[in-house]
Length: 111
Image (cartoon, rainbow, N blue to C red; front, top):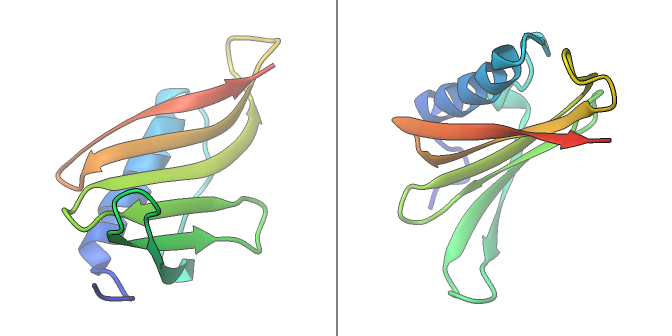
């Protein structure tokens, strides 16, 4: 598995993460930026498969993306903004998962 994943894959993941934020009526600007992620291979303790983990850190927000050997993706990126309609909640992060051509996602809320 390559340690520098395809830029088109990165564009899809980053756009999906921003899209989940935008669905809420919020914005995190141009974050995350694929080129700013650092990647390392890890071995899944259960399946023994080698996954590629990307990490965004060092700015206001933190995030990770896991690229599984079969092409599936799981990514999470911090938002840390007040929920626009639920006063008692803030949006901790957003998550996306699936295959790059069809990523689904949800926000993670906290009280």
